[in-house]
Image (tube, rainbow, N blue to C red; front, side, top):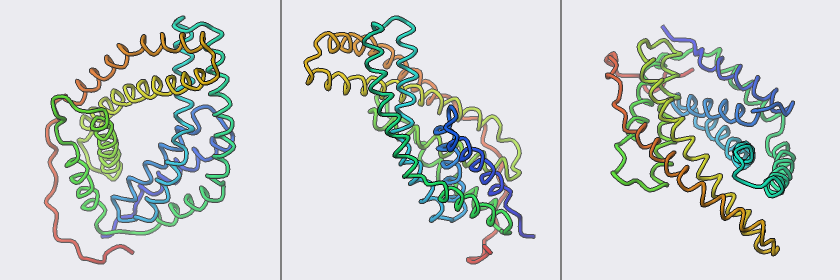
Length: 277
């Protein structure tokens, strides 16, 4: 019998909650909205809804810079608390980044109009009422495709290779969670391992981008002739080098963890070419 797609209902609810938080400008709203949209994109890609996946990815991309500013300000607050940067310099950096955040938030309101999120949510609601014969086979194929991107990293991967691996882990995790939500048992260890790897890679990525953006702010200060400001940011950037290297080592160790035992997948019968209604 065809299977109703509860995945879409779950995605619709998550998007509705995240959209409401985004409109209310609540803490973590941008992060939650991007996660909800990434999950929509992963599910849509797996189930052959390429247009929906593309729309979701476009919105995610439009919010990337804004989310990074939030991450940077959070890390700056930690650095300031540790006393790694004088208060007056930290306050100056934070003021600049706060202005970028406020401007970005105004731009985001234009880039992500409320009616667009509502159209996406309604689309997901309609899809949740449809039936589909090949739900599990499609998810299995999507996971196999995602796992092919999880090839072992070279002994000394570049930052770019490590970043691509981070995105591949995220995609594989989301599709694995879709399979679990659709009823496939025994995926807990696999999901947890991928979450740990994704978290470790995410910490490294956040820290390296934070240092990069500090250096960009330092260049601006140099153009203005703010000598003391420049020297303090130079000191902080140098102090962060070991932390970035340590986070990178942690990410590489996490990425090299043994894969959980292969799950038992049912043999798939040939699927008719047109079975999505």
